[in-house]
Image (cartoon, rainbow, N blue to C red; front, side, top):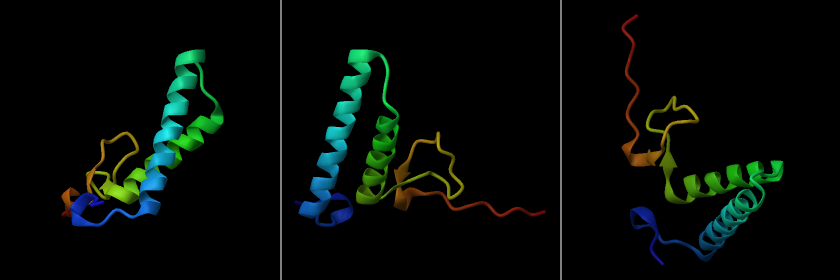
Amino acid sequence: MNGMNGKRMTRDMRIALLKARNELKDMKNTIVETNDLWISDLRNLESALHVMEVTFGFAPPKKQGAFWMDYVLKEDVQPEEENDD
């Protein structure tokens, strides 16, 4: 199966993404059913985001990106501006 950027998606990558997808589903179900979430859900959410970032080459739009910024494709990351100070 072909992944992003013409790279071949391995079975291990697909399994990692499947695990991340299922953890996201479990978290959503917990939140819907209880209007709450477990601390472990936050850990799983962080892990799922990391798997997607690594597998699909997602990155903050700037090298000094903040956690709240929407990610972009790695190849679209803007170069840092040089300060004239």
